[in-house]
Image 1 (spheres, helix red, strand yellow):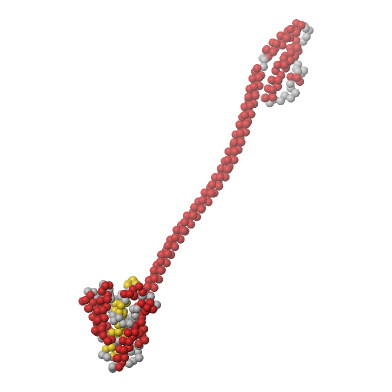
Image 2 (image 1 turned 120 degrees about the horizontal axis):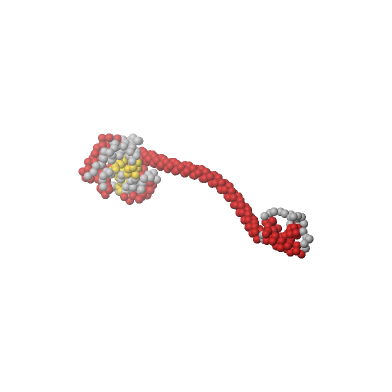
Amino acid sequence: MASCKFEGGKYKGASEVKAHFRHNDISPERRVIAKKKNKHIDLDKCRYNFNILGLSYEERCKKYDDRIAYLDYHGNTNRRKDRVTAQCIEIPVPAALPRDRYREWFLRIAEMLRAKYGEENFLDADIHYDEEHEYREPETKKLAVSRVHGHFMFVPEIDGKLNCKQMTLRKNMKALNREIDTMTRDEFGCSFMSGTKKKSLKKVEELKQESENAELLCQIEQAQEELNARQAAVDAYKAVLDARDNEQREKGERLYNVQNTLSEWQAELQKRETAVQDLEQQKKAVLQEREAVRQKESRLDEAIRAVSEMPAMSECVEKVLDVAFVTLKVSPGSDPVNFVARRYLEHLQESQKERAEQMCKDVKRTVPEYTFDTQQDEAVF
């Protein structure tokens, strides 16, 4: 919850106090230097920072030195070397307070603290707008935004003595928180103490470190989630690639089988083409044979026709007999049979010799030496 933070604000010697003055100084030059140690400082927001008294670093140092010297001179019995000579109270604005009332609220807080701890002990207060930033809640791991806050510096003097222990008693800190909460409710209409969580007793540096650790853990978790998501994406993509590989392998196997089948078909086709060519050749040979037969048949028909056109035997005999009768009349002592046969052969030889020989050749009858010339003398009737 929002509350006054005393922890980590105790400063013993003058060197510590003045180092704190330099660290919280709102001048642009000092904020640039402070950013080297506090990365959350936004230099663009430095113009919104202000301080209550408007004292410079030198004026604050003088006011602090003068006040400590005055107390030591006028009866301060706390002369221990480890005595606390300054206390810083860090106070954030209420969460529900409108931004345009921040300045008014801080001025009212300064009035209350100066009245409570003494005007002479109030060294000054720096209000920082430039340290607003997102941070990670260590407990919930949720993102939150830091609030505008003020650093109020006091000399812890009570009854003329440096007594920071009395000033920071638990009951006194609670009382201060209740007073601020009551004033905030009455005058600004919102609560200073929200009651959302216990007050932290850790130093600001420790809280920042815890927040940074929480942020780092969240970043690690996010990185792990992203890594897991990427790994899942890689696994999914690998599964897709494996599926594609299997598909390609199956396609390759099918293609191999198709190629084998195609090779078999091509071999079968080659065989069939060879068979067709053989059949074509056989067909051609058959056609040639048929043509030869047809030609032979044609020649045979011509031979038969030639034979059929040859004069009939009766006609030849009649003509020979006529000649023989005439001859007998002329030569009564001649042999009529031989005469008739000889005259008949002569008649055939003269009229049908060439046709008869051609007919024999066409029907492929070889009668080597059998001609009418060679057989004429052998015929005996």
